[in-house]
Length: 207
Image 1 (cartoon, one colour):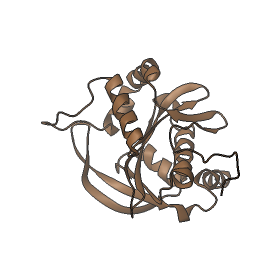
Image 2: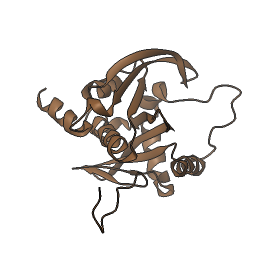
Image 3: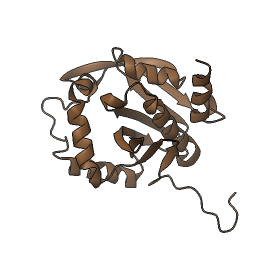
Image 4: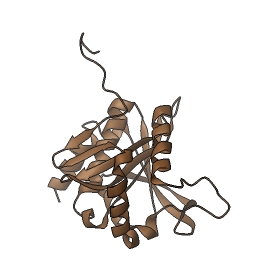
């Protein structure tokens, strides 16, 4: 229950913070930094980036169209599109997509960071912040992360988060020009009674 004069935390838009890391909604004004980071990290990202299969015609034609689509999904409650800023600099994205309500209360989490920010702990912290928001404020019960078996950096993220591997999805997503298999990781709110970020920090302190 919330006392008089106090409002419920809102699921969107929202800004999440942990020290030198900020997770906030993607904005039209991010275009220059987004474009520059992706250009600088093109070879780093290419093997893991979703691509549009031949014959499909629904890919956004511009950054502005991409943001419009993401904002539309946020208004509908099917998407939560975030960017992350590390040490005050644009560092990547975390997006919760395919949000399903009703009896499922489910969402799928995807993320990327620029090459210069990889391996510094920003990705797992950002994902943990978003997962906590989804569990505690948005009201989702289960979150899923799908990772290519060859993507050792992303696999390290889910390992640090202590997510459970629950399956294998052949031909799950079109990436780098072909349909790629993915390992499937998931967690429910019950897995992290103290919160995902708190669990992550405890895990890291023991390494």
